Amino acid sequence: MTVVRQIAISGTGGRVRAALLEKGRLREWRTEHESSEVMAGEIFLGRVADVKPGIQSAFVDIGTDKNAYLYVDDTLPRDGAGAQTSKQAINERIHVGEKILVQVSKEGSELKAPKLTMRISVQGRFLVFLPKEEGISISRKISDREKRQNLEQTLVPLLEKGEGIIIRTEAAEADARQLIDELDYLRESWQETQQQAAGMKGPGRVSRTGAWLESVLREFLSRGVDEVIVEHAAIHQQVKAFMTVFASDRLQVLRWYQGKQPIFEQLGVEAAVERTLQRQVFLKSGGHLVIDRTEAMTVIDVNTGSFTGGGGQQREQAVTATNLEAAEEIAHQLRLRDIGGIILIDFIDMKEQANKEKLLSVFKRELTRDDVPTTVLGMTALGLVEMTRKRVRPSLSERMTEPCVACGGHGRVWSTDEIYHRLQNEIAALKSRQDAEAVLVQLPTRLYHSLTERKEHEGCEWIESVYKLHDPWLRPDEYRIVYVGNDTEAKRLYER
Image (cartoon, rainbow, N blue to C red; front, side, top):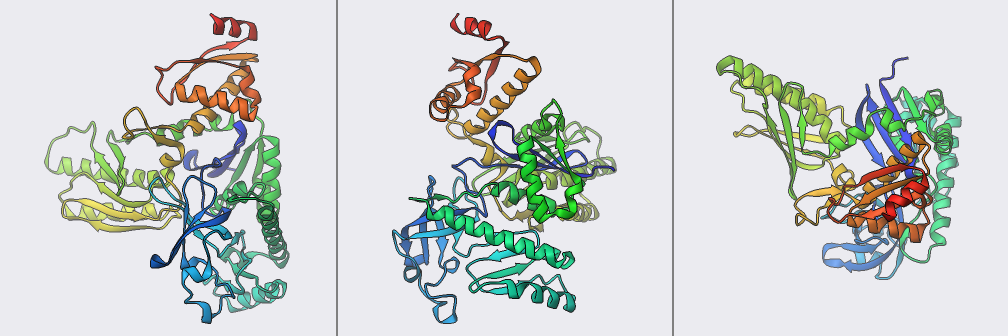
């Protein structure tokens, strides 16, 4: 069988990462967030820090560096969801100091706080379980009246008082047993969440084992895949358990990867992620894109690059060809980099209106491959294409890098967590291949201190075999592995 769409998952370095590839090319990249990051769908125990009746909103401490935002429409009336309470003010629904269970409906950014809701939902493949809202809603895409009635007759009797569900489009092809099993699983997940929250003393993430991995699997599997390949036996068992509930009909595509080379290195994913964070993207035609992010928008410039041909029709054809190639690549980069908000694209100037219309047509077609909603507003008189892409999570750059202190925050470098895990993975791979006992490595200031602190507080075993040299002249996201071999020689070089 030819593998067209593939999910690759790894647990190397103590965190789970997942990649969606199409024909061997990286399309989407997910990394299990560190404790300081907040992702959509996560549930937190929060404490109301401030209530602002003037803007009908509240700010909630969820145990992170930044308070999150809760609007009145996303709260639950104190005495139910009846019409008589629908116009309650925010200060009639929640009070300062009150503990509330909330879910992240929209991830924050460096400039914006995460958005919360008290209307919690537990996502499944066929169903969305609503533990705090009564009622049943069926996807409009299920148009067959008999199927709609059968779904209601199967599920409504199973709902307890105060519960509700949303029936997804995929449920139309599921049998009754699958739907009942999924509802039971979602209800149990919610009960586990409540138990976790009840045992918490202060604000923070309500963790449920494997919740992140489950969420990513559901999202990627919904696209249709030919193979799910998983590195590490424990992660493979987790994936198998989730797929048994949510995608039992696809268990035959699940495979345990046991190769010597790390899976993401084997598939070229690590290199692809590094290229994704670069400012320039080169096109096969010789042209290139320049992608710049500002506080207000993302600006993309298309350049002909190596093209130096003549004028007239020859130039028009070459420019049009470059623009069409750029349109496909930009759609891919927006999806891969998770770029959201306002986007302005400066394509190379074309003279003929037919070519401009063709460019917009191709661009819109390529954007339809993206599950995230986009809107192309057209081309301005200056030849700039204006568009928006819904922001569903922080961009890849925001998730994996941080402002560079050395250049006053104008540039970005790999985050400390990201460079820490990269070093860990590289050392593990080198030691495995060379059957080495120890490693000598030169580290920049922030990474040197990070490894020292982690060793003291977390007792990371892999750091025990690493001899660290502090080199303040290295870039913040740079390190050098000086020696890999036996412990005696590594120690001698370290003490020299």
